[in-house]
Length: 145
Ligand SMILES: [Zn+2]
Image 1 (spheres, rainbow, N blue to C red):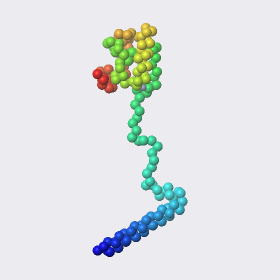
Image 2: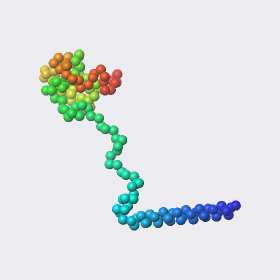
Image 3: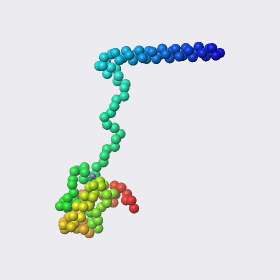
Image 4: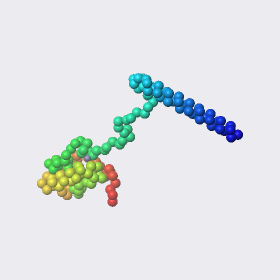
């Protein structure tokens, strides 16, 4: 019984060796073929992508998208970010602006109010019917409180 196992083992080893030899032979043969033939035959090799196809698109706020820089003289735009009832400046969860633009808007609104271009406790009635950039009743993100 033991001798039979031994012979089987030898046979399997020999067959494995021969199979290795055939593989190495084919590899050598392929190396000798010219480059243009190689490219035509190796269609199955994995390709490398230049960019990640699953990468998320970077979302931009409305001012960044339209490349608008808020200015204290552009009162009509700034009044969009002011509550029509109390004159309060809307937070970032309502306006959906990025941090930089929100800070800029708040700074420019304060500047305009100090200059007397913009009311503090209400919205200018001339701009009440302007089309809205966002809906304060349905904020982009829920407020943290
Ligand atoms: Zn932005």
